Length: 252
Image 1: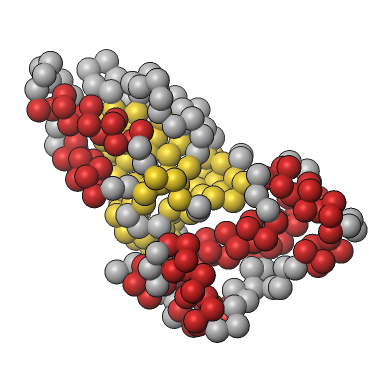
Image 2: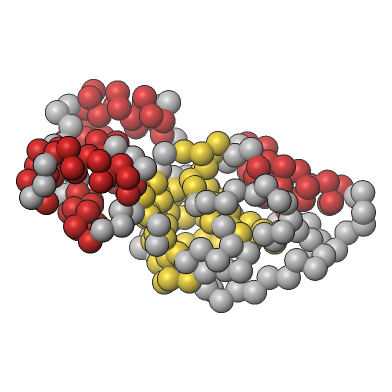
């Protein structure tokens, strides 16, 4: 997808766009002057912003407010259905980046919108579909698939190391030793800068890496062991607790 797309909202509040990415595709840093809902029908998209990282599994979406600088990396063949939204279409559109659950209704509305004309009459079916899409965007459920970026270089380096070696036993003691600070100092600064407890950040990092590896077709047991879990069952219990379904069934 071009990173220099221009959209007009003179006749409608949003512009639907369909694009398929092949495995390994990427987009460089860019931004749009409108909001964006990137919804994936297949594959996994990893979106990086200056505030953190988001992993978008199939059937979910990522919301990017207007002006958000971001870049994209794709795992598997991703069928993307994107909405570019006029930031002034509604006063209460989401104001921060977030991975969201795309309801069955919203998914069908997005697909339907691809066939709608740019201009339509007031009170028409087309107008009602566009307005219902905006209604659904306002009530999307937020999912825990983001990794907030810490502010200080020392914590940034630690987070990069955790992401590079997610299977390592990243205890509080190990992390504090790496930074040459007390565990109490580490925990305080980590929560202040990311809004998450250190242990929660590590768990999310492993979960997001697991989603990417599972999307690549890696066996569940291999993923579990590579990410530091003692067994298939321990990993599956964590996965089901967070996502409500077993890792083996998540991509079905």
